[in-house]
Length: 116
Image (cartoon, rainbow, N blue to C red; front, side, top):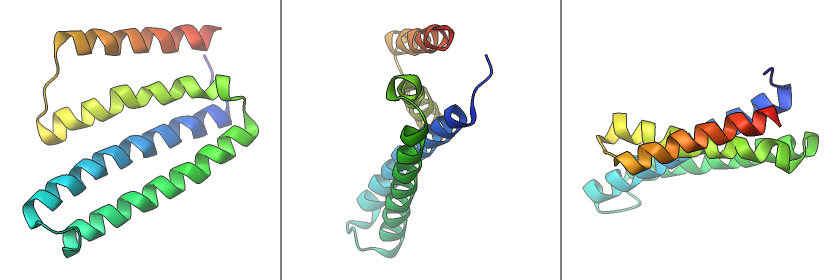
């Protein structure tokens, strides 16, 4: 399966969205440590997160100008794989076997969508 430039752009947007979710978690951890959203580190991380989301939103609008929503939206489900992988490695979060089965089903669904 060869992906178009628009599909690659959709994947980049999903990676950016996933990065934003991880940065929101980093912001929350920083907020717990500092006790203030205006603490320099917390504010900087949260501001960076908003910048990531703005860029991803602009990118997603570009993608939707070039492709049908039904064509690129399945890529969005990659976030359900990327965010937990990142949280496992960065925050030492653990997941149940049921969750892992769900991820396998998502991957299978993506493969089916790609063939259709």
